[in-house]
Length: 452
Image (cartoon, rainbow, N blue to C red):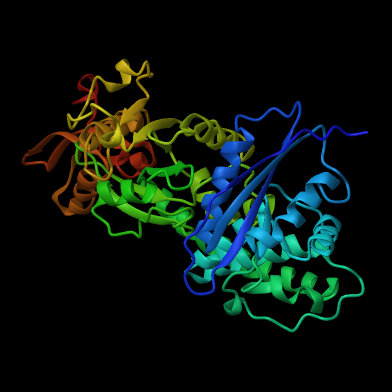
C-alpha cells in the first residue's frame, strides 16, 4: 500500500481579464527520486509556464508519494480534495507538473469534471503560440501529434484533415489538434506525422547545405545555450547590434537566429541564438526540433547563459548541462556567461573583472549585463581567446590580383603585419584552419631554399 503524505495547498489569486482560464496546479514529489529541483520550485516554474500560456493560476496543490498511482497519478484522497476545491476556486483546468498517461488524464477528467492537462501539453501549447516561421510551426505540430498518437482510443472518430499552416496552439483546448482528439484515429495521425517529418527533412537538408557553405568560409560559429528566459536573445542583440525579439517570457525564442559579430582582433564570428531549455523537456519536442538543435552541434564554442539572479540558477545550469550531455554535445568547449549582474546588490562597475574571484568562480565564468552592456568587451576577448586554438600561424605573399584573399583574411583571420612590396602583399598573422588550403600556394619559401 502506498504512503500518502499530508498535502499542502497554496492559493494565488490571479488578476482575470476577459475570459482567461483559471488553473489549479498539481505537483507530486516522489520519495527517493533524485532531482536538483524541489517540488515547490518546480510548481513555481509551472505557474510561470501557465502564465505564459495565458492561464491564471488560482491555487497550487502538492503531494508526496512513494510512487505515482496508476489510475490518477495522485492518491484518491488528493483527487477528492481537488474536487472539493472546485466550488471555492471556480477553476477551469487542472495542470499537472508531470506527464500523464492517456488513461490517467481520462480518469481525472471523469472524476474532477474539469479539463486536465499535463506539463508536456502546457509546453507544447506555449511553443505553438510562439511558432512564428513555417519551420517552427511544422516542428510544433509534429510534436503535438507525436504526443497525441499514443493517447488515442480506438472508438474515436476521424480527424478532419489539417494543414501545417492551421496550427496555432493546442494543449489547453482552444488551439491546435488538442481540441479535435475525439475526431482522430491512429491512421490519419500517423499519416500526418509522416508528412510533417518529410517536410522537416527538407528543412534539415536545406540547413545542411547552408552549414556546408558556412564551413567552407572558415567562419567560426558560437551558439548561445541556456535555460529559457536567461537572456540569450538580449545578449545576441547586445553583441551584434541586432533587434531580435527579446521578452521577459518563457520560450520567447523558438527559431534559431544567426548574426555576425566582430571580435576585438577584427575576426568575424557567427553568433546563433537557439531555443531555451527547461527541466523535463518533452522528448517529442527534442525529436521535432532536431534540425534546430543541429545548429548547436555545429558550433565551435557554446556560450552557456545563466540568469545569475534567479533563485534556481544552480538547478537551471545543471539542467542545461544535463540536456547538452543527453544530446551528446558535452564535448564542445563552453564559456559560462553570468547574465543580469546589474541586478545583484553592490555590483556597479561595468567590467567587474574581480566578480568571478569574489564569487569563487572559475576563469571560464564571465559576468555580464546584456541589458546594460556591462562586461561585453571582456566577453568578446574571452571568445576570441577560446577560438584561438582553431587558428594557424601563417605568412604569405599574395599577388595583387588576389585582393579577394586579402579581404577574406581581414574578415575571418587576424593580421599582425600587412606590407605592400614589389612582389605583392606580404601578410602574416593567424587564419582559420579551414581556409589554409586557399593560401598554401602563396607561402614564402624558407630562407635555406631560396636560390636552390
